[in-house]
Length: 202
Image 1 (cartoon, helix red, strand yellow):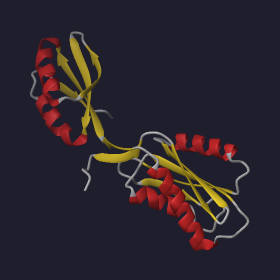
Image 2 (tube, one colour; image 1 turned 60 degrees about the horizontal axis):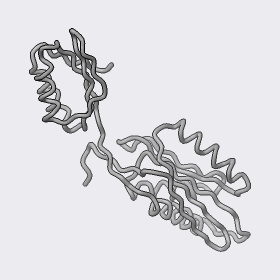
Image 3 (spheres, helix red, strand yellow; image 1 turned 90 degrees about the horizontal axis):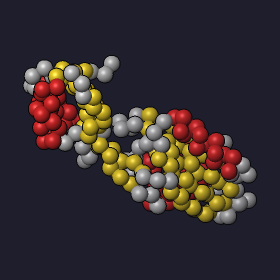
């Protein structure tokens, strides 16, 4: 069981190839963060494989894995996008786009054959990928007066958040990033420092 504040994704693009009855399935797995990135990749690969019979895909976005879509691109409904998405799900991946390009070999595969082929091609691309676990992080900005810098820095040293930005003036501010499960402890400690104010991002 993975922790609530971690998710799995792939590091860099990877490729897998599956051949069935002279039909060739080329699967490309890509790390993505936004719908815009996905659109750009789809345009690129549709141009690159302009002569292919079908360019099908599925994607999953976000740590909560709630934003996803499967597209059959003209294949019989549920035979392409769904099996690709199924592989993303069974590997518990997110922030990923898998495109499967099909070159038709002249022999029909039938719906069950297509499902097996798209699933296998997607699985090949995932098998070739480097999968990493990332943490879901949150940011907090704390304002404080200069004399209390040491108190703040001590907490930063002990809790080990990432320092995103810092401004030192009469009134200082620091933006910190830490994994979600550790945020409440960090906030509670920062709030105890004299003059410290937590600025919530609206």
